[in-house]
Amino acid sequence: MVTVRGVIRDLSINGPIPTIVSILGTGFVVKYDDSFYIVTNFHVVDGLLNSTVTFSNGDAYRAKTIGSDAYSDLAIVLVNAPLVEFHPLSLGSSSKLKVGETVVAIGNPFGLSETVTVGVVSQLGRTLDTGISGGFAIADTIQFSAPINPGNSGGPLINLNGMVIGMTTATVTDSQGLGFAIPADTISRELPFLVKDGKYDKHPYLGVQLVDMNYELSQAMGTNVTWGVLVQSTVPGGPADKAGLKGGTRTTTILDQKYLIGGDIITSANGTRIIDYDAFTAFLEEHAVSGQTIQLGIIRNGRFMVISLVLGTRPPLT
Image 1 (tube, helix red, strand yellow):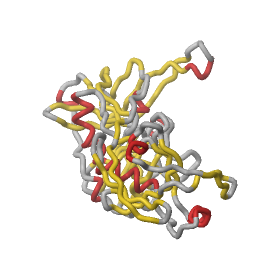
Image 2 (cartoon, one colour):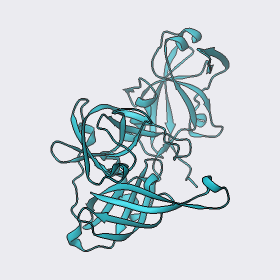
Image 3 (cartoon, one colour):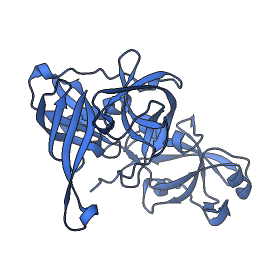
Image 4 (cartoon, helix red, strand yellow):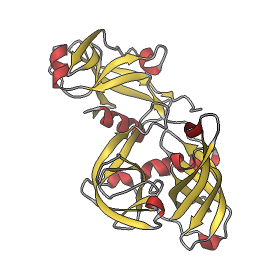
């Protein structure tokens, strides 16, 4: 495990006069293609100036971010250090995780180096809105109960076999035992692209606004389907629009929340049952890439049908 440090120019404090703010995060070493790299969060290195990596023995070196993906809050950092400094961790398979499984989070909360906390996997396939990914939520994250705090970001989440099954990325403010991690499978999938190309541009894009179906919506629409995701609207000319997905046609208010109803209800993807938005985004993250054609099972006007949709590519973040 390593500590990632640097400073950023923060314009939000004194307006046009930049204020220099110190940033502290965590990372860990992985070995790929016979070279060593530091894996950390995108939000740790975003805008970082004069970044350094400090190893657990106290040795520090200049560092450079060579690849990043805000959509998954991932970054790869290169450090020109002697080989003796690198002690890589092994990436496990997050697809084999079970709810209730014991996990260990390691990080530098509030600068307290190499802090270890223990918890369990609370749930899988969570969708996390961090505000750093241009309105797109981070899909398929691991929810866990081990306490984490600022400074833990980028640290490894390890199972009892010593394998990295995730990377801690966020906690909910004022919560207790409510942390989230990027799955190891996401890291393994993106690592080759981030190292070689500096980016990962295979996240699928539908161009659609969705909400979870529920009992109240089903009653308002006159259907008995209480699960799946309801299409609110589609982006003109986007993949969903081209595939013929239909958005809502009229507005209703349920518990002070306005909805567009009357659109298609997505209930399956490539034959996999879609319970809610989390399940849909997790399926896309795990099983689909841009350019791929998927089969969506939908309910339209009370009738089940299957449509083909060619997934687009998310626009690059600026």
